[in-house]
View (cartoon, rainbow, N blue to C red):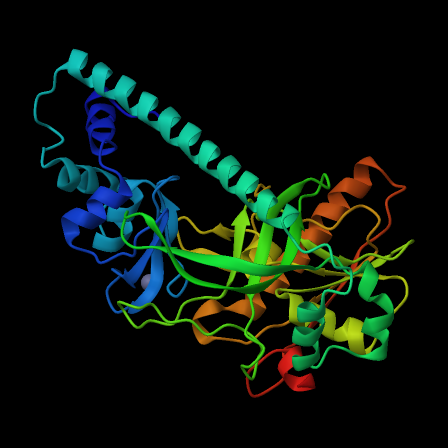
Amino acid sequence: MTLPDHLAALRDEALQTSCESWAKRQGWKLSPGLDRAGPCPMPGCGGTDRFSIHTGKNLFRCRQCDIAGEGVIKLVMLTQGLGFTEACELITGRRADAPFDPEKAAEIRRQNEAAEKRNRDDAERYRQKARREGYEIWQARSRDPGRPLVAEYLMIRGLLTARLVELFDQIRLGQHDDLPYMDRAKSGPWVQLAKAPAMLAPIQMADDRFGAVHRTWLDLAQPKGRLVLVHPDTGKALETKKALGIKQGGAIRLFTPENPRRIIMGEGIETTLTPLAHAFEPDTAYWAGVDVGNMAGKASRDPDGKIVQDRPDLADLDCWQPPDWCEELIYLGETEKAERNTDAKLTRGLLRAQLLRRQAREANPDLPDLVTEFVLAPEGGGDINDLVR
Ligand SMILES: [Zn+2]
């Protein structure tokens, strides 16, 4: 889109405001961190944490009403229902037809470009630092091949069948005997809230490299075997399953046989191990997809910025893709929380894998065709592992 000079200057001036600083200006309440979550500002949406702004990438999205985009102008257009020019006027407080200084406009553009580069570099440094820290944790795992705490946890989850015991040595899970749980209040220092044994799993990228460590803190006295932790100040329940490093595009390759042709993938480790433990197939790899977004990939958007759930955006290269040897890909459904649209997203991920394989086969007819299947989560909530338990 080529804009007339006065509008380009207005746009560049508007872009000096980040999504995050616009949120601050509007008084939106968002959590601390790189990916800040809070109630959705769209009229009639709300909630508590469905809307988020990624401060590093200057992106925003709501998983309920499906708005998503990059940059403050799009954010203001969508949340205020304004056109492009009106949104720029609101952000800058300047009218589009007001006189402007071309030299100052050029200077603003240079500043924007420099700031963009800085953000990109910072984000990459942050990712690589997290990846290194994740790798150190994986390396610090217990060298006891028996991994008794992991075995006991899997038993609590109804997974320690004869089959799993037989394959246990080949399953890529680690045990950390005493892993600190760190948390951070609004831009404050990291604080250790607990220290407990943990189950570790490496998240591997398409090129086999280490991407991140997945950690599940354990408390084997709990009914589900997982540490239950509330924040000492806010009383809010904390997530005791977390990844550290780069996870987009990766998978937890729990079990890979010698000559696999099929992949069964659930979001979590427990879901994925359920068919391995209870309905093992020898030519099948059991890999966990870590999160639904990584398994689904981005969706296409219509011209209004609304996500079209069932249409994959094939240009998104940041999500997981099945390797070339995979002939059959099965996704396991997870608990369908209304606002997550999980089934629609996972179905989209399978469609995207098929479309990409079809494209790849045009260039390389030796590649196998890809058959996909979606196994719905059991009725009444929960995932396939809850059913087994
Ligand atoms: Zn919303």
